Length: 268
Image (cartoon, rainbow, N blue to C red; front, top):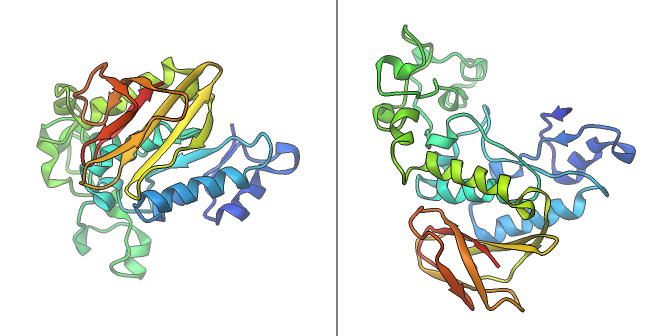
């Protein structure tokens, strides 16, 4: 599989699929790295990308990488759960940047500890803050190394690490695991079509569909409560997952009710 790290607007990016798809399999789609974290802006971005793809072109999505501040810092810790649900339910291949699955945040880097050549040439623009060691456990150096690593650790690493979050049933780590498990179980989330659903200004809603299976995703991108009507012809659904991991198998009738900062996945 050939992937391209190509920082271009969508209309130019898609050219790298090549004639008759003889180019890159996945020209990286970095649009979410700089998009305003607003439901309508992201809905517009998704629609533009879907329209621009060549026939048969397979989409892909990226929320974080080694050049941009971490998603949990860009949108906040609570909305980082919404971001995870978005990444793992959109049509196409998702790419997870290491540490995002445990909610790692941007780390301030003192000038004397900077390694990024960009920082040395343009102080204040360094990228080391999103390149800090993976936080495996609460031990010395977060279990990353037996000696002090080049870059400093996030101050909260003793609480925010793989070992600790594995033991927490409500953690963002467990949310990522459950989202990946849903993708494995449901064809609609693997390769189904994408169809946007009307929703309020603060909510991004869409349906993924494959064969007889239809799944509604509703993402509340604000702290206010909100609701989304089930698509026409569907009076009932079963909740597969809440971003808060606390509403198992709830039956939904006529309308999906979302708490502030909540995302829901509903089997129609």
